[in-house]
Image (cartoon, rainbow, N blue to C red):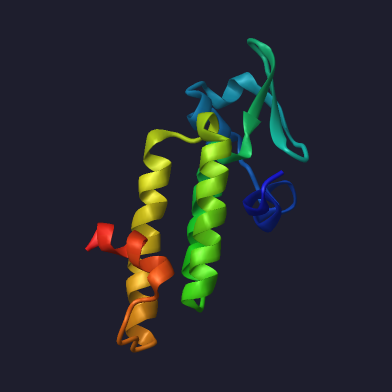
Length: 137
């Protein structure tokens, strides 16, 4: 389990609808008999195929929860630590993320980083974050 996963606690906090699962699997919601939230995955009982595992990372709620975490960082240091956790999770579980996921989070991160820097009236960008930030100007 990664730091990001522990931080989000999807099994306890996500409310996953059958409609959301059906859209992800590209099936009719009538084919879904039951959805169970397990510790590390979602288990879907399907009428047509039996059971199927889905990673929390594939859900729209995961993307939204990570974006929310980014937007709630109050310092550049918190934002940097969170971004390192996001990158580590994306590298470790790259098969569980779609192509748009990383770029979506990167846009949110860059926008919030600019906001934090302007609010804190930094005359000089922190060296740690400078390499990330210059790619998004």
